[in-house]
Length: 190
Ligand code: AMP
Image (cartoon, rainbow, N blue to C red; front, side, top):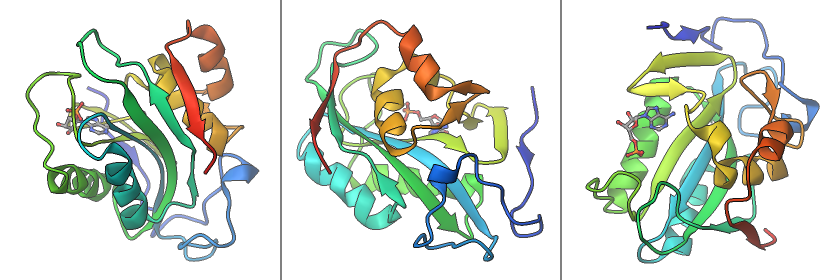
C-alpha cells in the first residue's frame, strides 16, 4: 500500500497553486497564512430536500468557489431518482486531510445519511475528490478519489470552477472527453 504523502502546510514553504485560477484573494486562508487544506469536494443528494442538503454543505464549508447545481442520472446500476450534484473548492484553515474527512462525514450524519445500498439513494454524500499536495491509497481516505476520473457528475462541475484542474497528472477536461455521456446537465447558474 502506498503510504499517504503529506507535507504539513503549517511547516512547508508557501503553497504553489495548481493553477492560477484556484487562488482567491478573498479565501479564508489567504496566501501567507500557509496553514490550510485546499481541496475539491463533490456533493450529491437524491433524497428529501436535496437542494437544502447541498446548500447546507456550502454554508458550513464556506467554499472559495461553488459550481452550479447539476442533475445527474444515477451511477452504479441502482434504480433510483436522479441526483443533484455540486463541486466545491475549499480552503480549510488548520484542517488535516483526515480531519477534513471527519468534517465531511459529520455533515453526512447531520443529514441523517444511512449507508445501506452501495451507490444507492442518499440524503447527502460528501466526497473528497482531491487535496492539493496530498495523495493516499489508504481505503479510509483515498486521494485523489479513486473513481473521480470515471464520473461525469464529479468532473463537469469541477471543470466549471477550475477550468485548468488536473487529476492524477491529466487535465480534468481530458478525462471528461474520454467519457461517454452519462446524463449530467447543468441545472442552473450559481
Ligand atoms: P461512501 O459510502 O461512498 O460515501 O464511502 C464512504 C467511505 O469511503 C468511508 O468509509 C470513507 O472513509 C471512505 N473514503 C475513502 N476515500 C474517500 C474520499 N476521498 N472521500 C470520501 N470518503 C472516502
